[in-house]
Amino acid sequence: GRHHVSVHEHRTAIDWAMGIKYLSDEMFPDAKKIILVMDNLNTHKAASLYKAFPPSEARRIIKRLEIHYTPKHGSWLDMAEIELNVMTRQCLSRRISTLDKLKCELSAWEMERNRDTAKIQWHFQTGDAREKLISLYPTLSSVTF
Image (cartoon, rainbow, N blue to C red; front, side):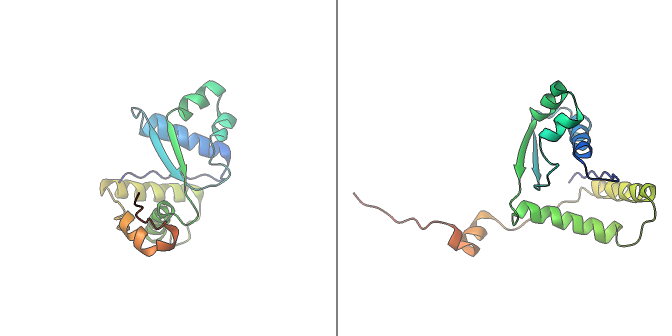
């Protein structure tokens, strides 16, 4: 239910590292562990923190992170895509002429989503997965001795 949007001209390792530092130090400064679920973009790596910060600072941030990379067809990725689709429909479905205007528009969208504590209601549970994806789950048979 908590959103944060940042806008950059490029998608670099440094940009990602700065965002993770902000997440760590500003958004969740008291959290012992921050669990990140993210895609496999080449800049989304712990090594990017070492590109942006001195080793001691990079290590300090990394020690608080638990990183999980989504599989290409994983439900976490679907959830992120749903939220990006909401953002596109509610905020980005028109031409926005400048980077400053884009930042302003997304900031307003972020504030509204956070005010509403907007969440995705994900209904696909483990039991559903076992039923729909039966070919991926092993068949267990009882063994008697």
